Image 1 (tube, rainbow, N blue to C red):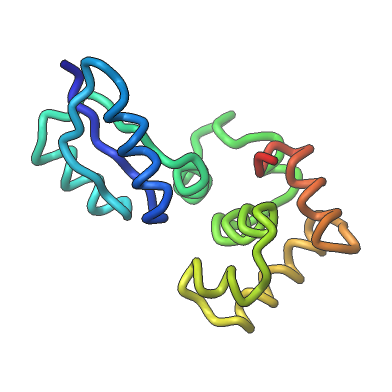
Image 2: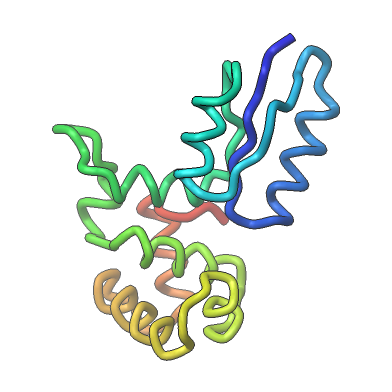
Length: 143
């Protein structure tokens, strides 16, 4: 039996991961976390051998960390987006409006507008659609 910890910031994503893990033979879920600190505590307190995680928050966390030489993706280097901008771009790729992004990320509508403008400028895009397409080409978001 493999002990698995789950990590997802979005409750719906966490439920999907729970269902996925529950369907696998030989997998035991030892707990779930919704933020990096909670995941660290969970890993310290359990015998987890693996982590099943929602990809976007993990990518944002990896990009927020001080990367060692060669650790940054070419898309990250080329675009220069912050971890929060990558989260906003991912929400844009999901088709979320600014108001929906604000609710999802727990930030103000005006902050989302600021991030979207910054993303458009950094990706040299004239529209949200063009920014998402450019982000996908750079490997920053999955479509």
